[in-house]
Image (cartoon, rainbow, N blue to C red):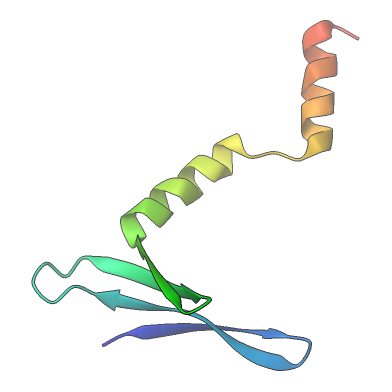
Length: 73
């Protein structure tokens, strides 16, 4: 079984990618296609990146405020 990822952009439905599992190991990947080339990303890598992003990625204004706090101004 596989799971397809779709989105709607300006009333057009677009296929984003497909989640699938390796036959022997059951490791799950996200397959993305761009310009006819396939990119396979392990779901574990996506999960790790999302976990890091939740604590490490901030807006420009967040960094401005954090800098002002550190400087004491």
